[in-house]
Amino acid sequence: HGIGTDASIPTHVQNIVDRRYAQVCGPGDDGRAGRPIPTEQQIYNLRRKDPNAKIEMPASRHMVPTGLGLALIGGYDKLDKELCEPGVRSFMERQVAMIADGAETLEDVLSQNL
Image (cartoon, rainbow, N blue to C red; front, side, top):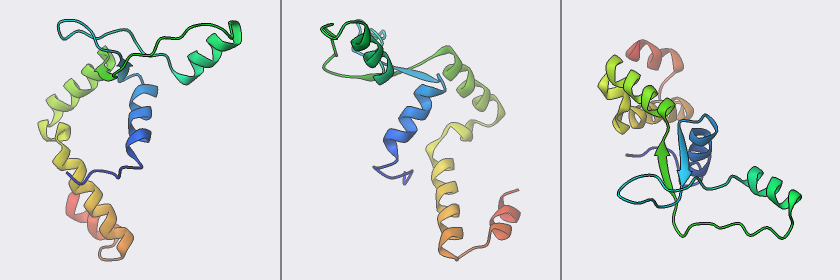
């Protein structure tokens, strides 16, 4: 969809987790979320308490939406279903790139979209 770059994906994922829209979990049973994977800060705190603590990390990770994340998407869906679609974000990124390249002005893009 032309959204972001490979370098920006970890930042997007971290923002989603930091804002508590989703959590990163290990695999679960029957489509349910597994145990939450500890964050770097949690691992650091565990190591400070017990340097020899065994910290199990699952073989795979999954992003699981929280209630807040589901509510946010539900709100967007009620306002305008297209807000949840990647095409909207892709369009916005193309518009921003055109401004950055000098092909469009901020004023032109705003007047076309608002």
